[in-house]
Length: 274
Image (cartoon, rainbow, N blue to C red):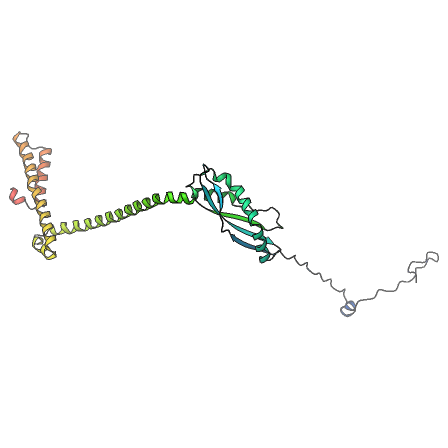
């Protein structure tokens, strides 16, 4: 049957009604459109492998008489491959990776003296940081970190220097410890002697601690007391001398007299001085 309208007769050919779906028949409204969300593509699997190299790279030091021993450590990463595959390919690319690293560091190593391995290591790691080879991300890529040690002949030369330096630093530290102990001990004994000196019975009681301490304490007290008469005589002559010159009382001589009487009273000599 031709569904087109009959142009000649002017009357359209009837079109059969559309078949209703069972959903519209049962519920009375159109069937809902169900949209299925698109699933994100799975992220590519990334694996990594750390490769420590047993054989160091030899690069010349300043003057080309000695070599630095550079020990590179590679971190390989790969996408869409297994760990075993990455490890296998890293082993195959090891010589190539060593050549890349050596090419990047050989000019720098010639700027450092043979015994400056520590400084060279710091500079090389700063230069290698953030660099990755090769540029093609579909291939295994690596980054590198290095450790640098001096030539064995340089190590032999440096050993006596460091032995002497260690000895001096240890002796210095030992002397500081001894000085702190002596200072602490001196302060403690000073407080003990000053406390004992003020007590008249301590000259005999000091023997209870031992003959050595008693002897030291006796000489300490004798020396302290021996200086007192000399000072008192000096002060007395100073005051008397100003009176002999008929200067009369003055602030200067009165100050000396006050000092004399104060000192005598502190040392128990006020009665004898009078």
